Amino acid sequence: METTNELKWVTSAKSLNGYRLALTFNDGSQRVFDFEPLIEQYPVFSSLRDKSVFDRFDLDGWTVTWMNGDIDIAPEYLYENSVAA
Image 1 (cartoon, rainbow, N blue to C red):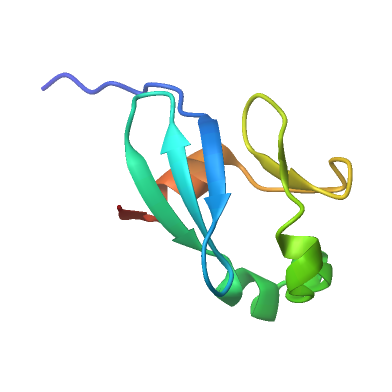
Image 2: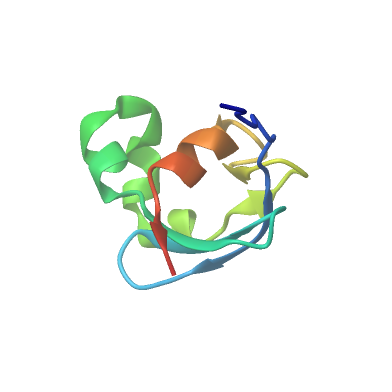
């Protein structure tokens, strides 16, 4: 059996209601990721609880970042833990 470990990265993102982002990946797939569980569980994401901060994300060529890259998340994690849009 052949497996492919194709590298994934985020090519576009749009803020949705709550703490969800609509993401498009380099393979063309469109997925939705909910950040609320991470914001609640991990202190590194706690500043994103402020929705105005959450909505000011950037893309760095690989993934979604906040606060000039101080906060980011692996694109593979986003892909694997999101749902198809």
